[in-house]
Structures are given as structure tokens and as C-alpha cells.
Image 1 (cartoon, one colour):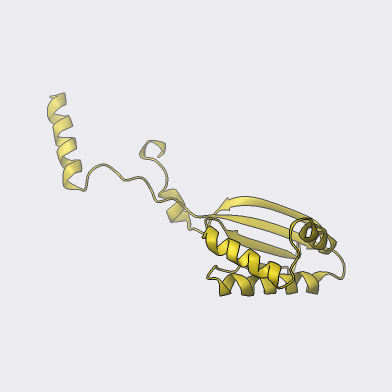
Image 2 (image 1 turned 135 degrees about the vertical axis):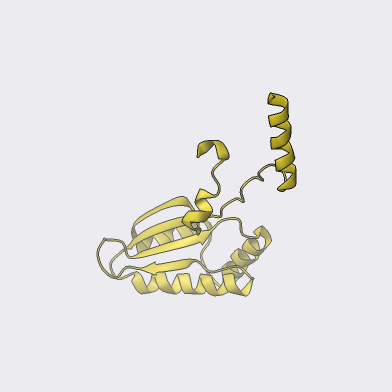
Length: 141
């Protein structure tokens, strides 16, 4: 009897496309939260705008920018997708360097003059609740 049931289950799976496929991988992003040093908001945004322009020029998406309007103490949130084309990243970095943007330690010292506080994390997304739930394995339901 067990063999008949197993055969029926396997036959049913073969008729519906086989075993469940691995769920599609969800994208990952970096989420950065900034509190800007007094008087440095415009400089920070200009640096971001120049960086976004170069990213777009080489075919990479600009970061998603969120600007504080009311409530908590942060000023800006940036969401940057992971997994971008490494060659395009290197080209963008070279173009920024050639246009006079600081690199290495000079970038660190420049950006730190603009930032009072900064935190970042890796997050799954952008996605939807349904897409996230679809990544569950059948045994975890």
C-alpha cells in the first residue's frame, strides 16, 4: 500500500512539473542612515548628486534617497542595491576620481566632516511580503 501511495505522489509531482523548485533569491541592499553635521547638508547632497550622475552615466542605478521630514533624528537614508556589475562599479569609481572626488583616506576624512552619526545594515529588498513568504521551504510552513 505504501508503494502505491508513493508511486501516486511521484506520478502527481511528475505531472505538475516535478518537485518544488528552489525559491528565487531575493535582492539584498545596504541601508545607510545619516545624521549630518550642522551646516553640511547641502555639501553632502551635492556629493551624492555627483555620485548618482556618474553611476547613471556608467549604467548603474543611483541610490534611493529618503529625506527626513518629521519625527526621528535622522537626516537622510540611502538604500543601495547589492550585486551590481563590478566592471561598472570600477568605471564609476575611476570617473569620480578623475573628476576630483576624494578616494581612500581622503574620502574617509571628507565624508566624516559631513556626518555627525552614521549606521548601516544589510537588508533583504526591495521585495514584497508575498515574495518573501514564497522563499520559505515546504517544511517550514
